[in-house]
Length: 253
Image 1 (cartoon, one colour):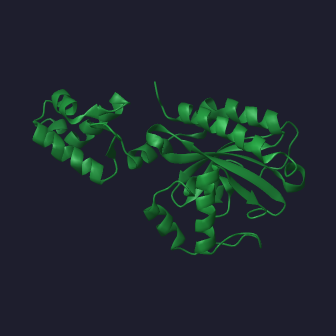
Image 2 (cartoon, rainbow, N blue to C red):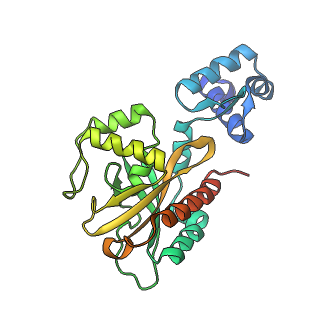
Image 3 (cartoon, one colour):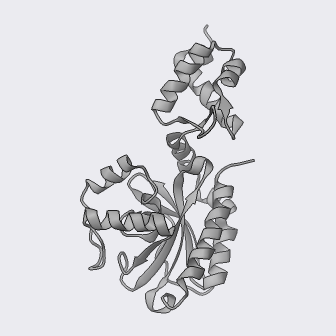
């Protein structure tokens, strides 16, 4: 009976496994040698996986690394217990710093999903409880993710109807695109009474392996209480948290 690894689908899977094990990238020549393939065969398999965004060329090298589609598949399989082990201490640090609720959000289709939340002791108001779907055009954590997706994703999202949650919610495409450009320049997203009335939130993108933005880290509180805090301090602490989370969520050795 033929080895399933030698069937076409089996070969594609073996290429993905070979690249994933390499972590920092692997060349076509090395893939062919490890899999005992002719270079032309290896090139054909790799080209098909690149076309599907499962692999990509590492900028400035001849190596291949996991692509955005494969990264998304890998991260969407993690459960909340896994996130707690990787991210809770970082969120706890933000809670201690600001006395407000901190959360981790993950891109899930056309929305951001809150996957982990930490609150100050005694707090009984949960705006970003795990499982909540956060709109990409309104929530700070959603905007922080949307701003760093490719144009095809952004255009597809903006082609669909968008809900106006409060009178502050931006729903017009031009307004949203202007805000996304500002987020890319500033590095932090803001939701001020745009999703939940009376609530102010900040979100910062998290880059995992390959530079993909699949997550954001956010801090949320009642607007009247949170607004007096210095924005540059919030941005700095969120940037530090995002860098820490990028390393722990990147599954690096």
